[in-house]
Length: 504
Ligand code: NAP
Image (cartoon, rainbow, N blue to C red; front, side, top):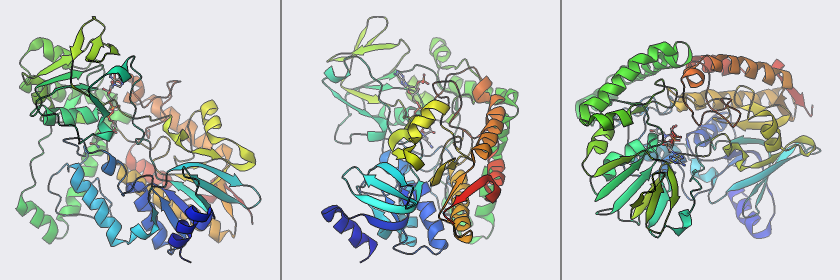
């Protein structure tokens, strides 16, 4: 019986599916990991990918809000081993990125490994068997030697608890759960939040709505970014002239690393960003009072630097009103702010971001002797060895795990470093004729001490802002503290002496 048939019968008969590895998620991480396992010789029955939705794509499937695009150039925000010379835009729109992922899925025949509508909600390690037992919400069970989460940290929408939210009579939804059945044309629309998602959707929807209210708690630094279609001759050049596309990728990489140098080593250099950001405001917004409202009072880079040539034009549109008074409650008719004004609206869009440092608790994970990983992380803070593996949690790997997010370059680069590392860890287990591997507590502590030391000097710690990079104790649990090539170096070789093998 093939594994897909087993899964079918598992749901019918509750028989567990046995396999070597379970991957969670079909975004860049999960798909990249699947390809790496294929390359290691894992066959059709050797791994499964559990996907909560009914289609592949992760972030790029879920986020369909108007204007959704990537803020890292596509020639860099794509797999190095699957280049696409004919990206239509430098910073591609969501449909093209999703198509790219579907193309990669088809090329490597990955759909046969994917079990759709399989939302993983818990996993426990069986000490005697040395296997993970992984359960989906609907009660299916998978038994596997390796458990690899490709869920990342930006997948659980955060909708703030605002008093009276349920009383609102109009439509309301999160930017990552855009309700396409709601026609916003000619409506009064409120957008709460001015982060990466909001600045992309505001200039798109302002064209259609009757009135747009933008609720800004903290202004973002938004840099100029022309994003016209890539001319056909350039796409032909990248397709036909060897080396041109690769040269473009290398150029993009190092330009972003220069910004990373400012963020991680020399925050003073980011003053240049502030000048550019102020110019971006000035060229679109004539009203001085509005300009002041839009100008951040913290160092550029402390919160994610955003890019748009159209955001401030959308803000300057006569239909748009920027509201900086704090939201106190919602009513049947709209939003009430601290000054007591009730702003009436028909539709509310929550562009309010995601559960980040608390997102790792989305799966209830119990390791050896029943140790609860979420409990441990609640006590110690979310941390992992090299951002991937966790001490005393055998054969458990996180892609885009703790402290491997970026503020300046492509996370696909980080993912590729991690999938190579995980593939090496699996190879090391096989080579040692062991059953399991986990980093030692001392290796993990040493790695994280160094990392937190580096992070203390970065703009994220010194820039004078409050961001979701920090956990409730003010410790950065989200971002890598250096340049991305340093992460590549840190994960290039799996070092067996940092790990304990068991079951030999
Ligand atoms: P975000 O950057 O976390 O922005 C959330 C916004 O909502 C912020 O302006 C925040 O204000 C505001 N907010 C949150 N709670 C609020 C409340 N109770 N009242 C008023 N305002 C509130 O979220 P996002 O825009 O969805 O982006 C999240 C991340 O997703 C990005 O940083 C990026 O990594 C990724 N992303 C990437 C792209 C891309 O192009 N690659 C596009 C979209 C998103 P404060 O700043 O005051 O907290």
